[in-house]
Image (cartoon, helix red, strand yellow):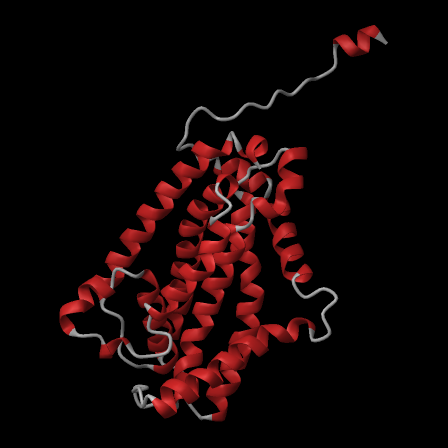
Length: 279
């Protein structure tokens, strides 16, 4: 018995000293856990719900109808020559994904406190899994949009092949901001109350209910710093063949997202060693 104990293999886990180290090999090793958590989040969301996954359709449909009545009928905002319902749903598709992913990722650590305090795994998996779980709702809403395009006999332009790139930009934006928020939320629980207000303000600062063409020329450079402007304009361009997003604005948005992502990883890694104690 003593001999077996003497030769027992002991694995000692220590926090990485390199704050900016991103062990992609380790993340890949835990890829099954990542997709398992993503699938769990997507299924638990509608568990014991009468409507079930139908809520993934009800929310964008209700927002589409409200925007159509308020901004399309009453405010008479331009819709670039297409029915306002299609115009706004093309924007709600990426926006709802972004807002859901950002909300879920910002609460990923606090909502998984039992996992963090009991077992070891790369903590980055938690916010990343929330980004992937939102793709299921995105796919359901995308089917609705395709049906609406068929109903109005609108054929997507050739630019539709660029759609995954704009979706990727939305994913990176939600992850970049989510890394900051979820790390801060562990220590400052006020973040959970602030996030809904940030998302609401961000929506009206993005061309979801209106066209970016109505923004005065003197403000467009500042307006383009919002990465979701390029995402929403990109979706409308890819699906409806309307005005393409400004290339320089897209580069500026991408640069901002990269800065937020790199700094978010830095801050997350810096705070990671204290998560289990503080949470």
